[in-house]
Structures are given as C-alpha cells and as structure tokens.
Length: 128
Image (cartoon, rainbow, N blue to C red; front, side, top):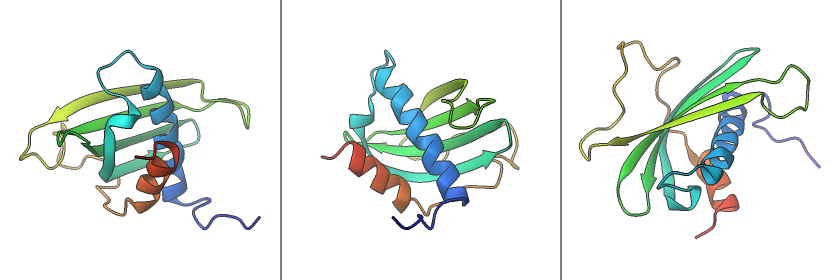
C-alpha cells in the first residue's frame, strides 16, 4: 500500500490529534458526541517530542458551533497509546469565528482552513 502524502506533515499530526480527541469525546459523559459534528471549519496544531496540542472549530449538525481544544501527552514508547489526553469544549457565539485566546499571537502557528483531510476522517468514522 502506498504511503499517505500526509505522513510526516502538519496535517498528519492534526489528523492523529483529531482522531484521539474524537475517541475521548465518544466516551465522555458530555451532551456532545462525535456523531453531532457536521464538519470542521478551521484548526490549529502544534506538536513537540512529548506533547501534541490542537484546536478545532466545529459546526454541529444542529447549527451550533463549538471549539474543541486538545492536549495530548505522548507515550514514552513508540506505538504505545497516548499517556494522557485532555479535551475541553467551548460553545461559540454565532458571530464568533474563533475562540478568544489570552494573546493575539495565539494559537501557535495560526488558524488553518485546509480542513478536508479532517472532514474526510470524520465522514469515514461517523458517516451521516
């Protein structure tokens, strides 16, 4: 099987982080599940050797929008599941494009709107 062109790119990091977040969200005792997500509107992603962080602006099937913030502590062994995954949700006002951050320099790397790989993953795991 040919290697994905996303392997090793920021998109592959964002895809992996989004996938981990969806799994946690699917098992969380919240009023929102991955099935409620219509599509990803924008994201940011930043990774280091031991931590992955990302944020996703999501449009829900009922028209509401939310921000999913993800922080993942990487496992010390290769191919091991993440050591710790934390997610937070923040509902966004209808006129609010992005969540508010403490600094204008945030988020790290800036917002990206090339979201098709994320939406393809979402459709594959949680089809309509």
